[in-house]
Image 1 (cartoon, rainbow, N blue to C red):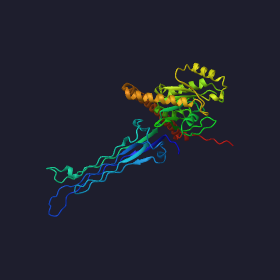
Image 2: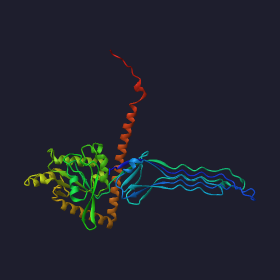
Image 3: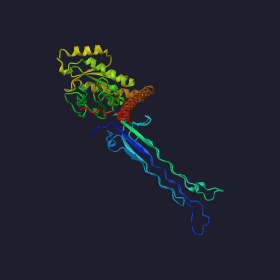
Image 4: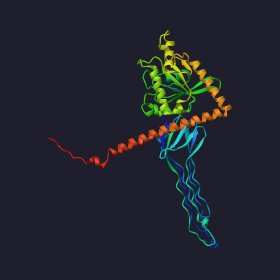
Length: 395
């Protein structure tokens, strides 16, 4: 199934039914008076979180969603039928943005969460409401109001505990294949990974965590280069980042320079995300001569001035991956315990997530703004003035 994490849709709520103009007409009932009923309310449009969905591909083929209109009122004080609400399922982890104002309407983070995105129109009133002592035969009614119409942008962020960070070909996909049942494509060339991959890492009965592998970053990713800006947002849902560094790159490039470039892109994209706990994972140790491995590792750690946890692994052979997985699980378990027992820790986590979300949305707004500017510039290329040219034929 194709992975789609962004989509633009149009939602339109139902129109309210008009009120009815009617007078009672029955035998032996002179001067029956008004009996026009009210119209029905228009249906509203709701989005509902569904953890069975993991892509927005359905919205690629169907972009317009409309709720049912309310029915008009009838005589004998009969109200019109209300329009049915429309419920649209979206993946858990979807952010809903108004494309006109770039306002974040909601963040769907739980299965079953319901979000109102289009308010149905109000019903019109029948003429029975306008009867009074001085207006015995009112001919006034009101019309139902239009339903709310919105252009929405849906952006899905994968829900994972741990995110893999690194350059293309650093071995992130190989690592997630080694520790989980996920089978992302692996090949000996950059940009093998084109979409995020999720893997469930099982530790024991009822013990597991979710790891996310996103497309590799390149220099300039935070400004839109390569695939980075589009997929960096997926890391904002994670609690822990594993920075995977290739210690033996095939092009003989500097691993330290590569690691520093990734840190720079992370800081440019989101200052809050760069503050997330991050562990250094030195990969492909099996490609180095055994006597050089520790020296290479110490040099990288020293030049990066790294003070956090460091793991030396070979993802393809599985060397060191079990120790990494066990350490990650212990850390996640401890973090959850702290947040459950300490209100201050839980509040810090909440504020951190809010900051990352705000910065991620700001980056999205910048990207949409650049797209709009490019579209506007393209339109300018076809200005009528461009056709006011002199043509000279040369024989």
